[in-house]
Image 1: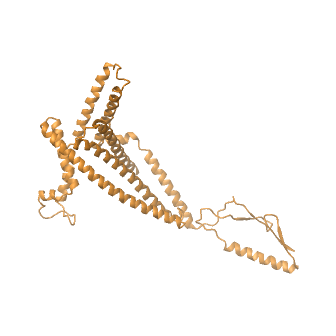
Image 2 (image 1 turned 120 degrees about the horizontal axis):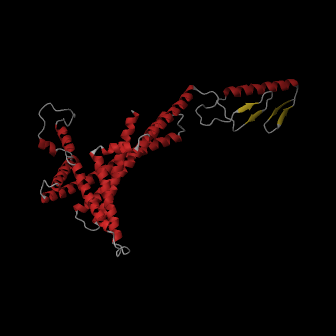
Image 3 (image 1 turned 60 degrees about the vertical axis):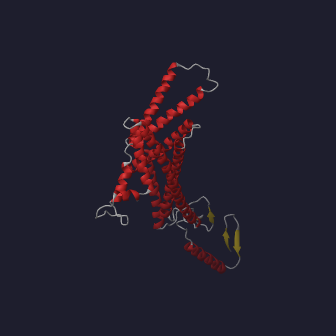
Length: 376
């Protein structure tokens, strides 16, 4: 009499003759062989199914849920795992390279440029203004109104005020002749064919025609830079005071209009970035719903993840730029519309916030360039 035993200890017995038992055992053995030959594990599966272990000398099959076995894997699956592992190692190497850049090196590269020195002096200027603002509010309070101030404090605050005015004049001198950049772009457009973009063989167009057909933001930047220089010459004593004040007011109006234009461009650019980010997220969601994994399609998912990280980082700095432009708009509105209420406090807060945001963006730009130089 033949029997089949199960993991729980139960048995099923088959009555009959010896020939019937032989036929039955032959049937079960053939079924067993066919099952083993047809069963194959998916090589791309992240978790292989439970596999059976055959105990030697017995027909009893035991199943272990924690037992993991490595069956035959196709060469494609092996290549996928090697590729994913190499990509992870390359990302780790890039992070190590990024961490190898010291802050001192970034600040050195930042201060080598006139724009970097301008932002650094702006930070110091408005930090001193913030300190004097808080000190004046404290000294005018009811608690410290009758207190006697030490004599060295008045001289220290006078030196701070002198340093603030010195930083302001230094920053104006650092940004002098910035009108050369928009002027060069206008002259370059004058020597190019507007349809093909190639240099003109014939005589270039008249300069007045070029200025009239220049894009308004570039022309506004040129006029703003020239007005700022005339105002700076007035502070240096090279131009009369009234002339300097008029050009200073005109420069403030140019700054106000250019800030509004930049805010509009910033909003349009962020809308495009958010649309691209939504497309990448939708593509990743569709891949996850269809069952595609990083092992089954590593190249496409890796490209999408990198693109999503790039778009998120770009959107972050676009938001930072928008906040900086809003601070500039509030600051210059007090000069343009001649507002007097809380002018010193508001301009100090907005000026310091604008300095911090612009310096952070410039710092990240120099850090990125240093990391790229290390990679190459």
